[in-house]
Length: 215
Image (cartoon, rainbow, N blue to C red; front, side, top):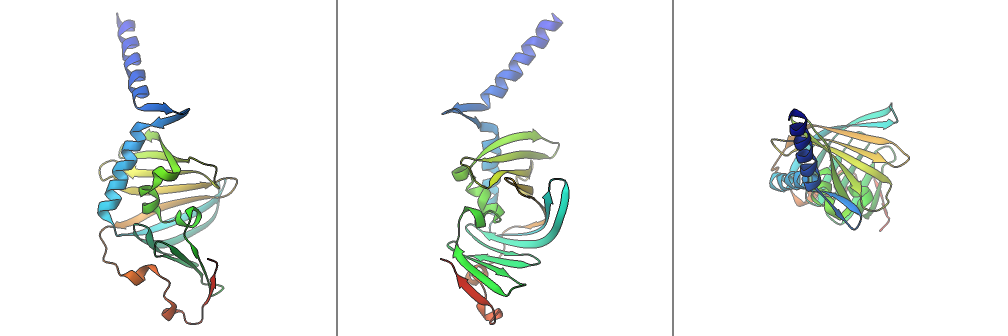
């Protein structure tokens, strides 16, 4: 009787597990992971504009190459990122990458490659480029991998979100055949006041900087 009960419990757990996943065109769809990411995305929308302070650790395998601190102001497709060696600005279409050491700015059009560090917007628009997969559920957090739908230089993005607040806590970007970028959020300030020129390169503040237009 006891063995039969254990067997029935196992069958029930297996049924629940399969019910949370679907196979569409040969691809496994994790419905539970989608539900979690949608909740995170909804929270980002209500929190925007968001100011995030972060620490990014760059690793090659288990070896730490560099640690950087910075801030990200994100408002949908627009963002301003300030780090120790560079600053990025994006007005939703144009993207300015300012390297302090060379006093040069590369002006280009925003794309998937240079948009990846706008963490909140990347999560909001994840369904265009990524499939979510729930890796595990911890006491206070969810751990989810975002797997690219197409072959890119990013092999996966692992995110950790708080189960209660649905806010991002950490993100790790795995570059195919390259480094790993682990980003830990040290502060998260929602509903910030912003101005239009927060998201364009401030030429008046850097009059000697050369702007290289690559558009």
